[in-house]
Length: 111
Picture (tube, rainbow, N blue to C red):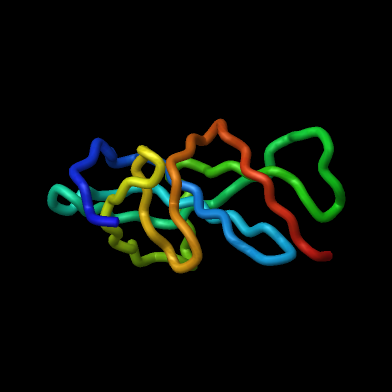
């Protein structure tokens, strides 16, 4: 994929889901635009979202806007690409995809 011009804005939220045998979800917020094809992001906190059908080892989470994690103080820079027609940012094991603070994402863990 090549970098593309984009309409990403400061404050936009992205989700990154990954894992094997359990599902991890990270949330990132755009904090700065860098040139025409790159953005700067910081990782943000998440909160469990109420949802039916969850167990003691699964649930749904959603991002907390401006809830920047102190354990990730440095922003990361990513080139904006497209995947299936929507903006995305490449990570180690997949893509950051657009999300909102209202959208809940499935997560699972081992106790």
